[in-house]
Length: 347
Ligand SMILES: Nc1ncnc2c1ncn2[C@@H]1O[C@H](COP(=O)(O)OP(=O)(O)O)[C@@H](O)[C@H]1O
Ligand SMILES: [Mg+2]
Image (cartoon, rainbow, N blue to C red; front, side, top):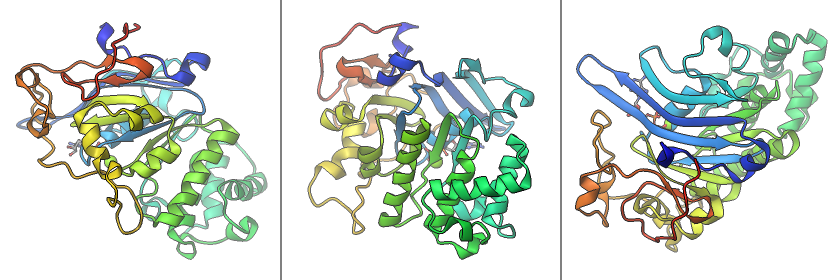
């Protein structure tokens, strides 16, 4: 279907994407009904590219990422395609996944304390990954752990390597999680709200670490965040999701300069209006009146229509397909707010 074939990313056109997601669907079947958590997400990620995924809570950002990591529970039904270096991962068995997860594909989560083992030193936890996946000796792994702690900006790494998680601050623990995630030099790192639990100065440091990894190792990063300040500062491209569906996708400058979907404009409202930052200086997603729809229905309509100030009859009577506007801008909306000359959609 030509209308859902994403155009190549700016970087991807040059080098070829390392990760391609096509028309991804994820649903969870319960005894009485089915939750359609992800419904038609597509993106390409080039080496060294940072893709931000934004949208209100419950819109399918984490489920999309868990699908890419092969970490969905067995109750999940998954459709579409996910390819890493051209290898299909949808439907892949554990034998295919094992050498990829934690090596080619890595993920960091919001709350580092729950992911670290409290009874092992951080050095030991990093070393374990290296011993298991890269067959390093204990001594080599320890030396590499110190290097990795240094890479993620932990001061005095040769001392810190022997400390336990509780001896480190929240920001330092998140850096350790990043060190573990990048220990095997992954091609793709997924960061699911990695700075949400941290205060604003610590958050800036973590984002610097991610950008540094991208620059030094060429890691491609999917950054899930609620924080549009983070998006503006860190991302190359942005994917906006609403109720499991992609609604707008554009290079970051383009998205901030010409947000076209009414939902995106709603999210950006907080940033575009002066004085809208919270006390700690973050630019948060705007509160849009109304509620995120129930994901148990899968209407042939725009799911944002009930909350949209621009909605007309056709929005309630047909699902808008993703189409490509100028400048690599993609949008699924019957009535974009800033219409641009439409381009041929490349298959
Ligand atoms: N294991 C599961 N079983 C059933 N529903 C789930 C499961 N995991 C997530 N969901 C649902 O999928 C939807 C998307 O969740 P999620 O991807 O976590 O949202 P977010 O955008 O906040 O990361 C939510 O409605 C959530 O309740
Ligand atoms: Mg989430």
